[in-house]
Amino acid sequence: MNDLVTTAGMVLGSFDYQEYDKRLIVLTSEIGKVTVFARGVRRQNSKFMGMTDPFVFGEFRLFAGKSAYNLSGIEVSNYFEKIRLDMEHMCYASYFADLADYSVRENMDGKNMLLLLYRSLQALDTKSIDNKLIRAVFELRMVMENGVYPGLPAGNILPGTANALSHIERADIRGLYSFRVNGDVMTEICRVADEYRQRYMQGKFKSLEVMRDMGYSG
Image 1: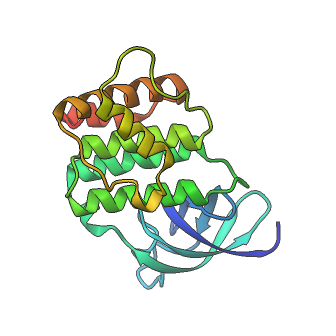
Image 2: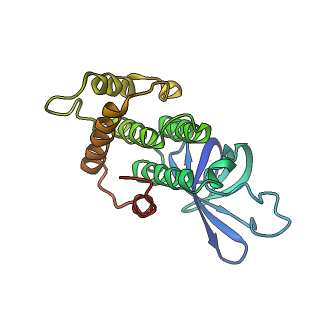
């Protein structure tokens, strides 16, 4: 690896490294999930100050090293600052980032996963949709994008649930959150999403435990 890569991306995780650096986990559209070192970013005069926080979205310029990438530049499009100021939204966003981290590998095509994460954070940011529905839709579409969606669950389900699952499967990601449901359908969609996530995404997600401890998730 020795080329400069320019790609849309979002910071999934940001960790202090050595005295002034950070180690980033970045989900990109072009090269999947990669480790990126941001050299000197913790110095007071760093031009990247505030640009390497979780959920920062923009165009990343990355130099490839022997085993990881080095940050050359960022043009930020969205900081998602309001999410980081709201504890509940921060918990949901961290969970979504964990699922994306679990699902994407380096050199994968990350376009759909990145768009799904970005659109889901936008949904959280607008506060116009129940957070539990956003979570269920995200989990279900993530299973679908991973290619392991088994279709409708066995047994009888409400017609509204079947319609919602069809929308989640077929909708352009940009319009994924354009529907609303009533209480019974909401309960059933959340149940199906949780069942499928446990079956097909079997990692242990610390962020989900935190959500449950905080009372944000059933």
